[in-house]
Length: 475
Image 1 (cartoon, rainbow, N blue to C red):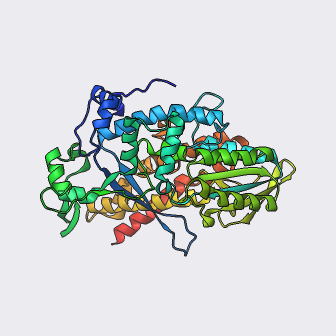
Image 2: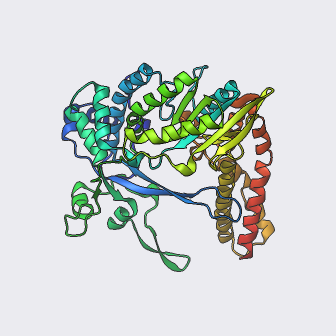
Image 3: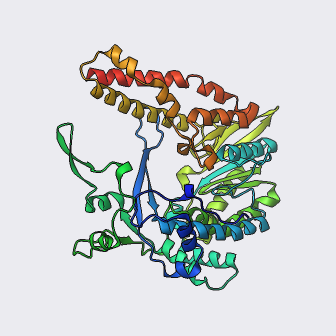
């Protein structure tokens, strides 16, 4: 494994409590065990991602919430370096236990051509395994509240096992404490306490909002003294800092959290592999999404789902499989294709769903809910652009506004890949269109329906934008 490196582009430039560090300062801090032992970790800053899950017309979609906590710059560099150290021993453990191709999230895995794999490749591999077996059953399971369910004592034990020690070294223990008994502050409350958020005039009314544009926000939000006084409550105000006093849970969003979550399930992964290996099956886990592919039919599939659901608690008392997201599929060979049937659960009525795609035994499609959510987001983006245009040119007629509406920008810039899966940095600037075209190419003939799904993409975007412009103009 290559030596850990930090370059100027890796430096954190988002607003937080600590000052910015140079590359040399960051490396000196993160790689010095003595400095790590005495380092004072700042609270994570918390914000919540909210989105509405796909729902059929006339139904209300579930509002999903995902708390994201991000560390201060110095803390992040330390977490990143110790992630690097632990990755080496974790990868060795995966190889030793024949899990290299089973645990696929948060790892750098190469395809046969040497390029890095992303979720498209992982979905392709899974569907190929299904196709190769012919007559088989597929079990899809999901772990509930994964990151919040990690038992600290079990995590610590696995950490020791990987390092082959009975007690964590002081520097590793410092990281363990910082990531388990972590402190957190809510972003909006911090910005309000420091005077960056509050009442401001908008459209003739007073509303609460950010008083400083993000690009002008100071990178160090406050001095150490102000942090102790205004944020930690040293001036007599209520402290904004809360500490995780539970015996489980790690913050999702830190540079080391994804690796720790993978490490935590190492013994579970080994146990599942041992169950599936004699059956001639395959085990795939992408974070909290589990896919089991084995020969057999409905009886075998349901029995396997029950077995995994019943045993997961042995590897952490808080670990639970979501029943409503559990599905069992049976595929039967029919000529060169397979017939598909959902025999348990409600997810995947049109095919086995995995990492944003579905396979019906014959062809691979972009998942229906992925497309629906995409167009819902396009509608929201179109609405914002239309309202902004009408406000910019008050009193102008519709033809003038239409001539000024930048349809191409909306088409080209909407739907970056980060909304549709975990990809490597090489893919950061892909649009949804590029992503889907790439998927069709990787899937080959099996992915031919994706071209049909994309055929009306541009027209649908323009149609939705025109509808929002008409609505904004009429108000």
